Image (cartoon, rainbow, N blue to C red; front, side):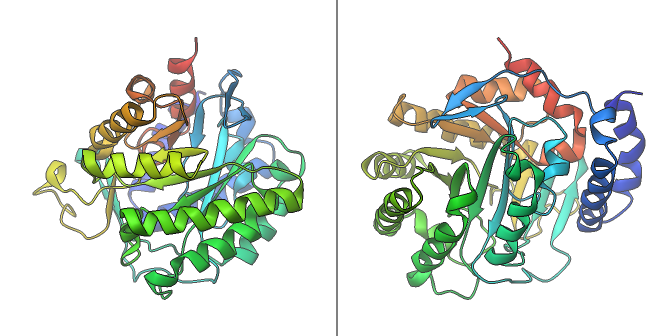
Length: 346
């Protein structure tokens, strides 16, 4: 039986649960299947199609976006699905429960999801322990991105302290580190995308990155994850800051606050970030604007609304070098990884 057929059987069961319950059911189930060696038997993985980006060799250009595995507890199971890279987190210095439930909602008619999870995670020490215990890390099986953020109760003027703390903790175990300043679900976080705030943050992070590289005798690239809700001037300011501070890459984009595509739908007015198909063109537009400013100076990783192979191709046509998936997996299942990798081959 094909993985598409198997997911077509599983999806109605998963969609009968609320979105967060389905999430907490699926990942442990996937982990059990992986431990038994069944995931690789059930999922037809894409052929290798290596891409070298930020000095790292990605097995294929289709990665997992952060957010699906916030604590790094399911790395091996997710790697079995054939991703060219795995990004886990967002992790914060201290454990925090996130926002009150319910906080995740499907919008099936729009192939969208609204979440206001709020960086729920077990803290950076538990996160690092999970990463260290994964076969993927121990055997250096592929590219592993570790995504860092700030605690909800850390004042925004002290946000850099949280990022520096997490950077120091995750640096030895990461293939690359992503600095997430674009979640809409931590109060004032997107304020860090402003010109002066971003300048101060990147300056200190770059200094710490170089110090850690010297300490560990290994340079770990650093990327910035940005929001889709920006105009051309805002994108230009971010591009200028990325170049000025020699940041290694940019991930475009996170979820959107826009509700234009889901007005009138059930759950369409819920607070939080909207992902899935409704963010696709917003993300592509930011990628195009970034590409116009950055040229080939630093790579763009495109994420947002990829629901099939042609969506992944559109991200590369807009200017990305790699893509990441998350919400599309919930609607299309694990076969989406192969569909996207096939579309990007050659």
